[in-house]
Length: 363
Image (cartoon, rainbow, N blue to C red; front, side, top):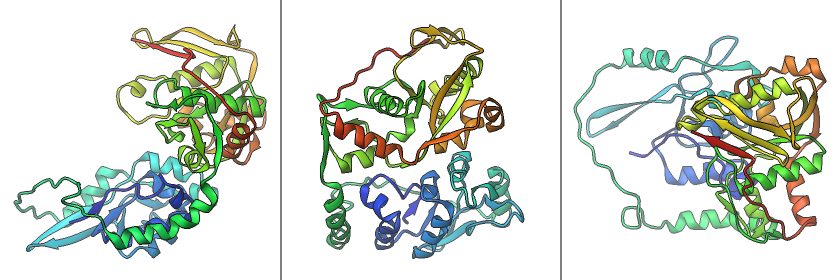
């Protein structure tokens, strides 16, 4: 059996250019028995996902994604497959991460919600509670078990020929390869991107989502395809005003223990001027300065976030939009942060960056 546990979309310029339609075509050729949705299935918006579901020749299931008004499910909740006389029940479940991404869809994002996963699974399993015995074997994916599919190769090349015309051009050349090895630490590539946006937008601090940087390394020669794959989420940038007390609270949320214990949390790359030394043991800042000065709890600072993080400030940064609006109305500074990065790189060749100790985390 072939089941897909989500995240079919994103990761390539072909998928980004055709907004998942090409990927659904590839999936139709692969012929999975069943698939469920992950957080990247809503990258192009909920309405587009529902369109892509109609393009699929296989069932896409989910049991706990609801329309808030009437609790109606958006997808078929489960799928029962039969193999060798045994029935196998598949149930699709999503987490809060998917709901966070869905909020970016201003058209219908606020009208959906997720149900309690355990309850949804329990309701379905109560109706199909027969359990059989079985044995299984893990089959590795290699050249022997998964031989090259010529028809699939031709199908992908059909799209690649078109995307190469647009994406196979050189944007810039760095002095060296820049890396982004982990999300929960300062990185050279993260520093460069945060600095470019900070300087271009004229703000005090750029909080660049670490997870929005999708490449482990970039350069030294940067093709447009590399840049798009590195920054696939082409989002708007919002400017907020926060005082020193609010900024410290936001940073504490970013640096909570879950971020260093393997849980999925949102982490950020900080633009130049930020100096943080955080003690995990004491749960306190040993150093917290901006542009060489201790944060003034009463002073207001301008910070910028991408739309995804702006729409989820309460969860990600422990501050509400209502509280932000008391300080000053948020503003859209740019409709595409990737365009800003591309333009800056084109106009400033031979860029370099390194880990400077902007964020030091002690045990």
